[in-house]
Length: 127
Image 1 (cartoon, rainbow, N blue to C red):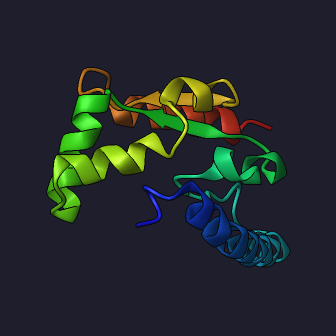
Image 2 (tube, rainbow, N blue to C red):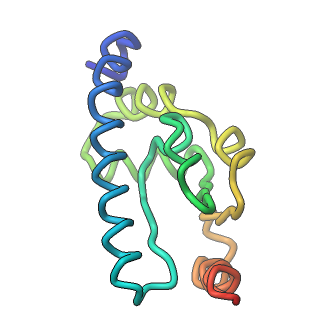
């Protein structure tokens, strides 16, 4: 319902995103106080849309061809194509998200995900 109703989606987002942001902030603070992790990752589909990415030290965006994304979500959530397309239409495109990214991982089935992740890990853990 929320993917077809922008007003309802906005109402839900104004409730959910601030609460998630506070929880993630507390979690990051706890990790920093413990001092034994070089970095922590926050995964969320709407980091850029919600503006939450601005509080991060770096943003990693994972891109994927639209058709592969649609098929994966249909399989994962057992949804019809139209429902998946409605969800994706309510989100920014990969290109729009990538404009804000410090790092981009291409999940297109051609480039090694492990190599891309290890390269980013090396950069994030450099002194």
